[in-house]
Length: 367
Image (cartoon, rainbow, N blue to C red; front, side):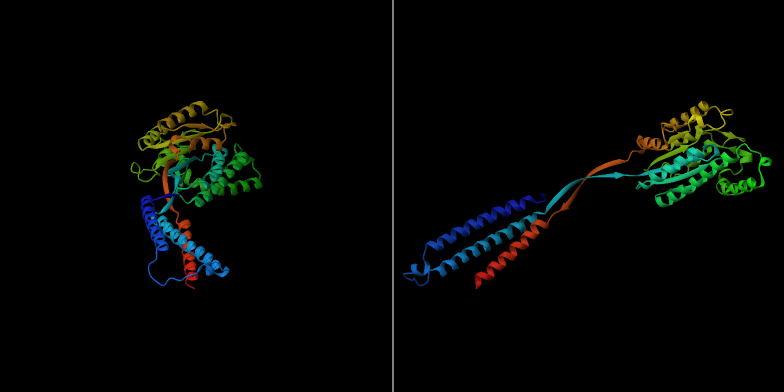
């Protein structure tokens, strides 16, 4: 415990000591000198009586209690005026982060996307103060979750995406490479039911795919960039976490390629981190070169000041996202500050007890 105004206690203590010393001197002088009144002789007999000694002892005790309680009251009052307080070192975190999860929802990435969304649910539950957004893209981009700190809503939408990726997996494992003519009537009926469910998501992300193509990585990244409000004017840390295999399958030229999109991110102080699949699950390796696709995506990520993480058997999505959180762009700033808490309880209670004692002793002495 500390005192805000120590001088009050020091000065008040000195004055109190002087006053007590003066009163003690006056009391001694009165006891040793005769002033007024009638002197009585032969009082020793009375002084030696048991009842007198009992009353005198009670009087002295009550007077000591009265004096001590009055002094205690004054001292307690001085401590209250001096304002006792406690200092605590408080470390507060400043979370001003906007994070957009940008997912390439091509059917070749259903496993990786499912892992990402599944782990993000756990991550989002522990957030406080950050804003999260989710973009999904293929031919075109859908802002699936605008930037928000409504984490319950984000978790609900992640649940929906998980169902989408489960459907993608079931569809690919059941029907990929098969001809419709090879399906039985029952199988074709199941196929149609599944296709209808998938069309809810696909309708936005494969719009105009017969003209533009699919997996337009650059346009997906650029759209994620311009999902941030007030680019260049915000003090918030801005990060895009992008999950793709970079298997570009465009028919018409892209509006912006992945390199140009990364350059735009760098200009607007948006850092991009990439999550890339392992080679064993790379889709259509006969048409796309794994190393070439990875190298192109990694170079773009570096332009945007980020880093590429590869999902391997030894490097799970949980490990990857954990590593991304430790990157400089995503570190939460900690500000140390002092918090002052008044602590009047002890001197206040002491003051009350002393007042009660002095009043009680005074009333008894008056009898």
